[in-house]
Image (tube, rainbow, N blue to C red; front, side, top):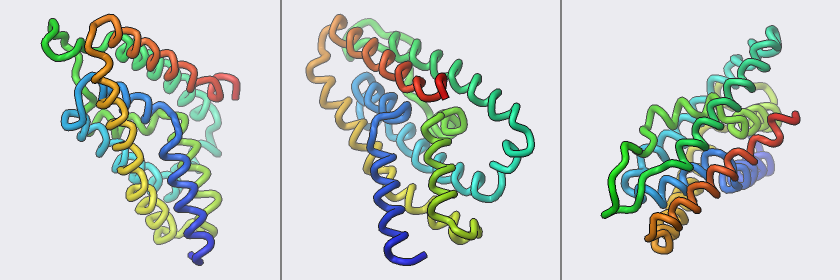
Length: 198
């Protein structure tokens, strides 16, 4: 990969990783509700899970969707339903420390990694990265794209988690936290706009 293409890939990875989407909104909500340390498995699951997804998509998994378009439609339906369920979970997340406890817990590493497969933004990012930045779609080129996304993704998702953690200072009352969680849930639902209309 030449220098210009590599620089373009790094910029694409950064912009697509740092901008709002289901992962980042959920990480901000998790940072606010559970703190940075308890959200680390979620962050690692996003970064590593997405890198694995890029490798598998680049290795030919996307050809399955070309052969069976109905699977792509089914994936969209499952993705929308799952994200709506997650929005509901965020809207009803745990109260602040010291308040009555609920059974809400942050995403685990495995949950976050598996979430990439139903995340519409992750699919868009992976398909674009493979199509634009791997001319021959060789395993080496695909692995390089996955590695760059992994390196760029961790600071990006950490930023959203820290933002959520810092916002927790202002979310000390149950009413404010509830309003924040409902706002995050609403934004997550709004992030489905391109999927539903696309």
